[in-house]
Length: 365
Image (cartoon, rainbow, N blue to C red):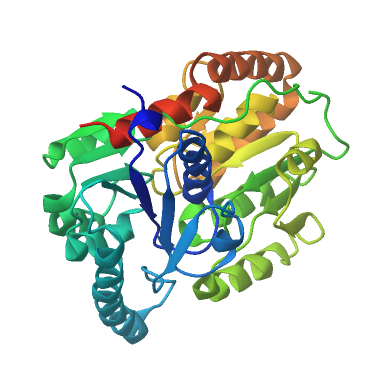
C-alpha cells in the first residue's frame, strides 16, 4: 500500500526561517511528499525559508527557536526567552497536529521541545541533522524524547549517540543531485580554496583563516550568509582576514550559487570544529569532483574516508595547511580523490533514491 493511496497530512517543523543544509533537505522532502499526494504544512519562523516553499504548502508562523550568538547575561536572558518561545510554538503546533491522520516531522533539534509541548495526536518523527557533542543537546533530547516515535539520522555517526540515549533510531543518508558533470581539475593561478557554510563559529572559518595565513600563494573564499546573532563573529572574521598575513587574499562572497562557487575553487574545505551530521556541502563538492579536505569527525569522516577526500584533526590549522599544500601539489592525488568521490556519490548519495527512502523511514511505523 503506497502513501498516495492513503495520504496523510505531513507537518514539518523547523526552528529557523533561514535556509541552510537541514532546511534544503526539508524542502526536497516536501517536493517528494507533494508528488505522493500528501497535504503539507510547514511550521517555522518567518524568513527566507517561507519564500522557498512550494505554492500548495501552508505555512504556520512560530517564534525562532534557538540561541543566536548571545554571550554572558544576554545568553541567560535569551535562554529564558527560548523557554517561553518553545511553549508558544508548542501551542501553535498543537492546533495543527490534532488529527490522528497527521504525521509530524521535526526537522531540527531545537524544535523538539515545541513538539513535546504540543503532544501531537499522530506520529512524530525527528529528522536528525545534528551529531551530539554537548550536554545542552543531550538535555534537549532527554526532555523531548517521550514524544519522538522514531529518529531518522542522516549518518551512522549521528545515530550512535541517539541509540545510546535509548531513542529508536534508523539511518537514511543525505543525497545530492546526480549525475552532474565533473568540473576541471586544473588549478587556478593563484590556487583558491573555499568554504560553503554559514559564517557561524562552529563551522571553523577561523581555523581556515589561520591555515591559509601560512600559505602565502593560496587564496581563500567564504560563500555563505550569517545569522544576525553572529554579527560579532563575522566582524572578527573580517578583521582576521585584513591582517598582514592574509590581506588581499580572502574574499567573502555571501550567498553564492553552488556550481558558480565550485568553479572558482581548487579545493573545498569543511573545517567544522564540532561534528557535522551529514554536510551537504561536502557531498555537493564530491559530486562535482572538487577535492575536499574535512575534519575527521561526524558524517564528514563517513563521506571522505577510504580515499574520497582528505581528513584532518579538528581545530588544527597546521594540519589543515599541510593537507591543502599536499592536495594542491599533487595532480595524481586530485584525480584519485575526484574519481573515488564521484563513485561514492553514484553508489550511495543520489538524492533521487535517498529522499524517497528518507521519507519512507520518517512515515513508517
